[in-house]
Length: 275
Image (cartoon, rainbow, N blue to C red; front, side):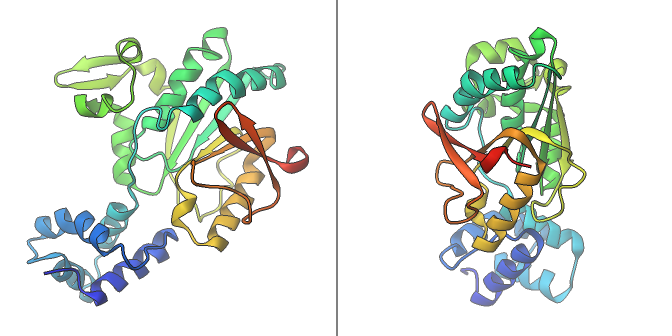
């Protein structure tokens, strides 16, 4: 039986309340497919029955599982390629000049999912600034505690490393463990994982030179996008850089950003230097 309208609406309300992510009509199939494993594990007849059970007999763990199932997004190594090339060949060299007095860089990988993005950034930094004696830290956050546990473990299947990770980097920065690949400790030490809802305060994060907030804003309504971009500006150091997804922009959302072409992508920088 297809997901009932009542079950779909309840899930949409729950996800929006917990994560601010908006699930619109037309996403019924997505919701159903994401919740099938939970329904089967619970022994429910179908997804609608599972949702009705959670709705009528509130269970915080079950609600959290539903939200996490619907907020875990697709990811891969060096996703889309061009942003990581721009980071390594243009942004990092510019920051090395701007931060020469501190010899330190901090990067925020927001909505990091299972860790491919922050580890991709860590590999780039390890092969550049860290090798030259700089201090680097990548703070990687996500709403889902489940994906964060996998990210912290830093262990991936052959199928997962095949998705975008160049073979030379796999050999240099990973160790084979049975049928899986483990990120080497020198790379893992550069990344600090933490649970964070993007609609919550960022006060404990500190300041960053670069923020990767890619393919996330598309899931929020206009006001939530504006709020997030405002708070990102506050944690971005003067002269810092914001990377958004290819389909995302600050235009018409928060006019306090300048858009600057870097290679084949555009980065966003706070107007008048920020802060």
